[in-house]
Image (tube, rainbow, N blue to C red; front, top):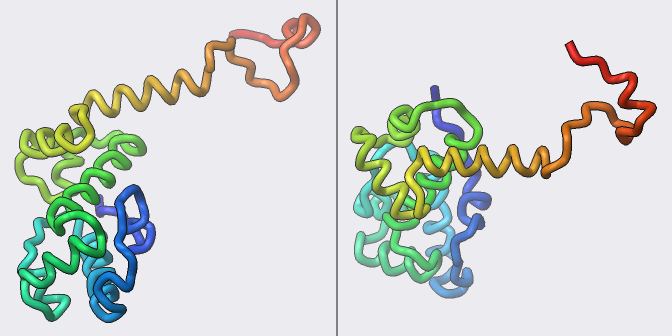
Length: 164
């Protein structure tokens, strides 16, 4: 199974603070945004600041400083958060095991993946999935009896409901 891609603006805008574009000049801001897009496209493999800096054609130390000023997080912290955001999505929308989710995101060790996931989300992956399912069921039912018709359940309509 391949990892889904996320466009850079969506990934960059989702829950992470950003500095202004003029914090580091438009050219540097564009390089950082390209790095964010590269990160979003490569969630399935480990990345290093040196690799990202080389792609942006700037030194690693300067890249680190620009990235932190523009995004508000260190590059690897941001990358980890992007990976954990994808992990949450996979846990919510697929039946992949935790081990399979870890592999989809380039983690060879599912136990390490679980520790990272818990450090970011305050829940272990399996607990996160269970909590999301419980919330989804609760929201769907909202404590009311299930009514599969579009009309309100009345005494008259309840007579028509047939149970096998």
